[in-house]
Amino acid sequence: MMFTIGCGSDSGQSETDSTTAEENTEDPNTSEKSAPFPITVTDGTGEEITIETEPKTIVSVIPSNTEITYAIGQGDKLVAVDDYSNYPEETAELEKIGDQQLNVEKILALQPDLALVTEYQHQNNPDVLTQFKEAGTDVVVINSAESFDQVYESITLIGEVTGASDEAEQVVSEMKESLEVIKEKAKAVTEKKKVWVEVSPSPDIFTTGKNTFMHEMLESINAINTAGDQTGWVKMTEEEIVTLNPDVIITTYGYYVDNPTDAVLSRSGWDEVPAIKKQQVFDVNNDTVTRPGPRLIDGVETLAKLIYPDVFEK
Image 1 (cartoon, one colour):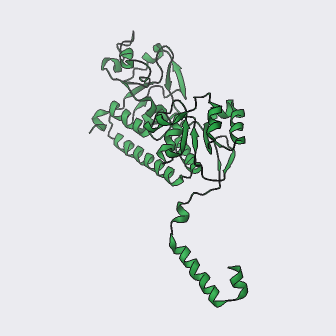
Image 2 (tube, rainbow, N blue to C red; image 1 turned 120 degrees about the horizontal axis):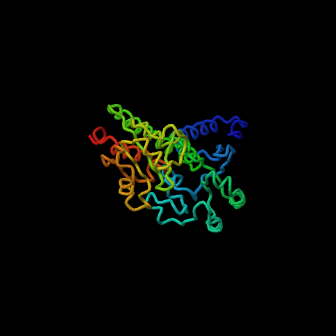
Image 3 (cartoon, one colour; image 1 turned 135 degrees about the vertical axis):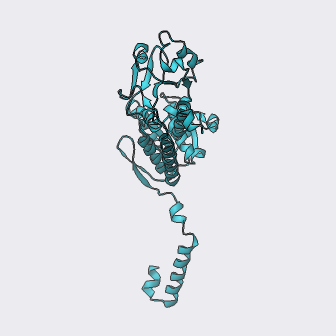
């Protein structure tokens, strides 16, 4: 183009204009669809990470990041996941790389372009992450989400670093819309129920207080969290729980404890608890209520139908 302008050729200029016009009309969506790489993002540590090219292979070291990666249409890039990643079913076919203690040799042998890691690895295994970086793997720390907003941030960040920002935005939008539909329906609740959520069994019983997405889940369906005066994930005794008089008890550990509902119903001294008297004790899929990913909406819907069947089963 500079050569044509320098020569002052009318015919050359015309050809250039024609070529430019053809390029502009050839595919108006090309620039929008192409991934914006290189890209610089701020990860969970507050560090700026620059990723030069769109990753073609990814490892995920925690189930929530795995589920998010699949939800935004990037699951085919996953070459390995942690031992607990179990959804969707395609994860069963992937290499397993350990749990919090990663199989570093296996990961290095796979030579992934991108590793989606956690705060735990950043704080406890910084030398391992350094090995990944030195081997040419981009390392992005995804924060542990404690609220729906933080879950949305995680989805957005994973979308950015995998080249799927539009898909991530769509997932977040659908989650928000679904949650609003549930909240709107919950306005029909005329008498709020008190709910006790048990995320681990006796004798070390833990529950969820405020500043957690499980607390938000109960609030969104107009239920009262009996541990709402607590903060975060807290341990309580059976004697303390009885005094809360919950109308409904939710357990989340049926995947490793047999008959958790029967165990709660048969607890000594709990006979007068409303939830026990009316047999309103339910176990729910742990992954949908404690795993900070897209399926949290499924968890909210499940809780809504169990706690307020007259409102949400219509």
